[in-house]
Image 1 (cartoon, rainbow, N blue to C red):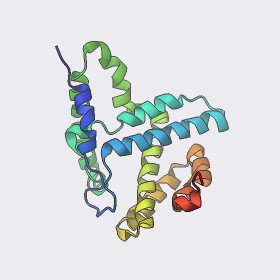
Image 2 (image 1 turned 135 degrees about the vertical axis):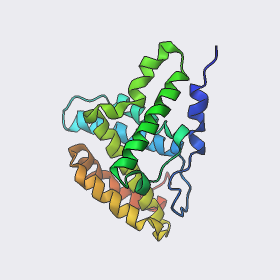
Image 3 (image 1 turned 45 degrees about the vertical axis):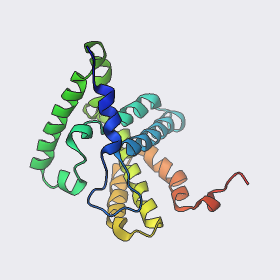
Image 4 (image 1 turned 90 degrees about the vertical axis):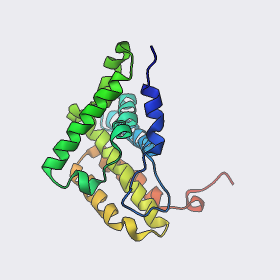
Length: 195
């Protein structure tokens, strides 16, 4: 018997994000998930190394890689629609749960239990808080990059994402933002090259 789980995952690159916005640079779910994994890993390391709290950064990175996997089957529902009302959010959550089940069925039985926590991490609020912070941080960085490219289309989204980040009140996130966000305002010459 053959299974389609990894063929499904390969299709993440076809799911476009920010579909209601005019982007200078298109972003797909696969690219976004990789950035969220990098950021979640960093937030986990900050929790462990700076704040001396128990944390598994590698697990956070793995969860982040799969956090939008259901969108392979559902598509990326734009934020203004997804969060328009409790009823829409609840219905979308139900659809995502069906998608998660479909993805798990695309694995051999022996692997389903191992992958389930990555696809259902939202059920663990403390762990998922850092992944959600990384997800929002990735969106914020995308908005900054669009603004820096001269695209004013993302100004409202940038302000909204920053407001969400500030409301999270996560010390790891605040530590990261204080030390690293300014770098996204720089061009390559300002960052420095090998020369």
